[in-house]
Image 1 (cartoon, rainbow, N blue to C red):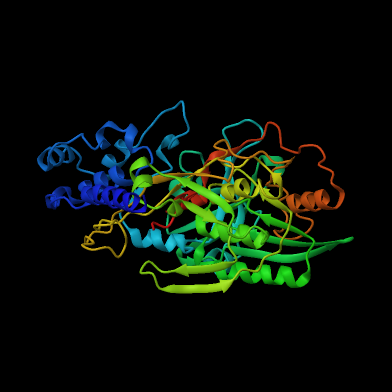
Image 2 (cartoon, helix red, strand yellow):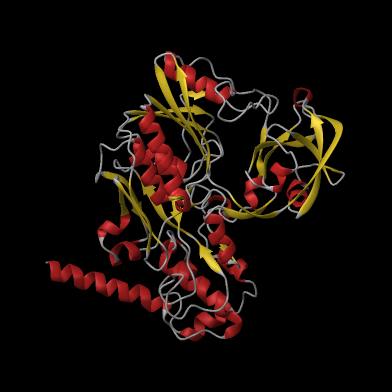
Length: 482
């Protein structure tokens, strides 16, 4: 039986690899050929896209003729995504994407981006007019924005002298140098105060472990962690903070994911093991790929188990970090969340729920239960595979649905136990016990009281713009291709 299983795995591996080892396509459609092959091999909904069907083309000439109809690889890529408005699969074509510079993508996964360091969200004026502004919710340490004095809570109504609108906000903030014009909040109808600050973009590496402290309240010793990205390059820093929590003997833990759009599934697994520790080797999350991939690889390829060990390797397999996880063995954890909490943040919540008591404070999470991988134009689609082409295009397609041990996920996001959103007029200082969302969470821990929802009726923070949307890895959860 074991021999038969091994033979089947080998057979399906050959079938998948054969899709990537056809004769080289003509140079003018080399990237287009890569796009089709990569999606045909790994895209989660490959079987639902007629032009990705394994029997769509009978020979190379047919596929070359088809690909020649697309001058732009980007147009081809998005034409091949599955769209069904009745089901949340790749909605609005935003979950899968293609880049022409995989170096920048890799840097973004590691927290290094071209940025002013200013993170901001868009909002409508509260008076119902067409007025629009943005407010700063965070500033990256070591960035030009920090050096120029930009701080959380600043209100911006103009950039480079141009009044902000929903239509121009992205373009104005995309400039490498720009001047922001500040305003007073004025109850959600900002009035310019004449102050301007000019900021420049540069390559900045952001440590996602932004704030970590210990709060004592009565008989509670509470660990607080503001964590902004699941980046495996900082797994050691994350583990070190849990060593501090462990040494302090914390009784309760708050992890602030309100600005965390996701990242590494493996790092989410490590973080779950830091929070707990009593479930080592039990199933944390399972991955459902397309049938071709599932049939071609061993079953253990598609599971993530709780662990007591961090063991990270580089793309060539060299161990770059190996250390014991500092586990807290908690049975309850509190997460602060928002509409910007997505993908790996939601997997962490979803996969811990069957094991411990998970409490949520904040606003409805984003709703993204699928993960992607980076595909390169080589024989096996990896960065260091044979015959890696000289171009720098890469694909980041959705390849897997992520479920917890009970086979569950939440495509619509998670609704908190306590509903409270941020008030741009009173954001507070992140990590300070008086900051409104943290204060409410501490009250929840110490009294058990949920209180009444404090969502602002009639006030809409625009879902259409977030300064982080320009990041190559925005709201992404990535899986290492094994």
